[in-house]
Length: 138
Image (tube, rainbow, N blue to C red; front, side, top):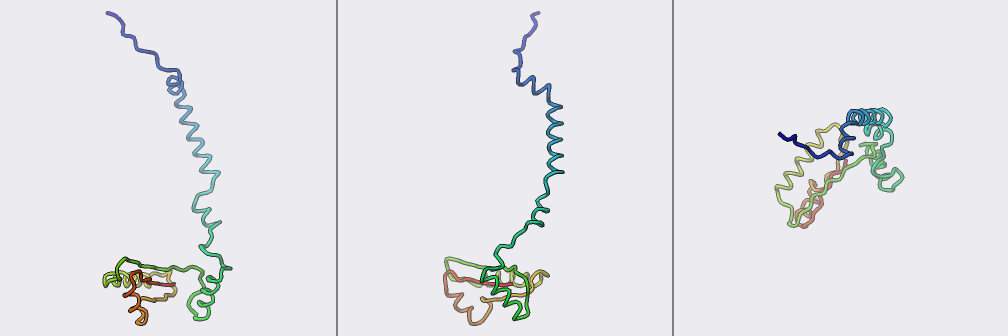
């Protein structure tokens, strides 16, 4: 019987196979060093987090002043909810908006709210406009 001969493996493949334990240890060491040397994303966010708008911006100064004058909030955080559609906004959108308002009021992080769509004077105009804006300020 003739001995079967297999073609020799390429040199790079033999080297990777021979150095596999060293490569695994090197990657593990690199991961360990990076985990210890580089701060976590959460830590960087806490230390260097910025607000979405500058406190010096006129709009932010106005919101802060409104909160103080009306004794509502001294926060510089706010959210605006805008619902738009190609057609006039229907009653199901109103129900969705009311649900958002209800959920926002039960959240402990909401200190005040300004409803434009829910007010009688603005509701009629918001329903007629094809791209009515529904605002909620907090």
